Length: 241
Image (cartoon, helix red, strand yellow):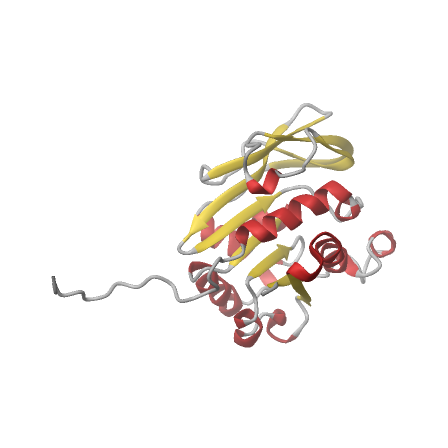
């Protein structure tokens, strides 16, 4: 069965900023969805959703049809309904995969799952980013060049206020000197989470073929092998043996 992917974006910049609209005429969500379809073909079934959709496009029914959710946000984190955040949180604990992208590190759902500030240092000087693979045997790193070169990108830097990753797949360095943990894997409940930092709205990063490769690999890694079930609960288990 194909992996059912929902590509979510707040879609804040595209209708307001012409340069972003020219860079991403189908929206950032459209570019990410196109990359997944390009890379994975029939192995995925992709839909998109944005902030202004009813229930942000993440209703109970929508999430019931989602194996992996990708999340891109920047300017409207606080506009996301707490009810929807809790719904997504429970779905992740039940096994749904979650890919948190770029400035989604400040999203309500990522902060809730991490339990930390998720803060970092940044500037936008269109600097070159080199994404170095530090876990070459990890499935997300399969086929990714070493380094993955992004010619212009917003600069992120440490300290990054996240828990230590369960697995660190990528570390980036920038022409200005910063280093950053740019590809981090976590497990929460039954769900797998991957944070990947490249992808600012001011640069055409989601058209980059190797960034698309990373996201495609991450979708397959995060997809639950046996589907999404229920979060683990305490239960009374009398001895019967």
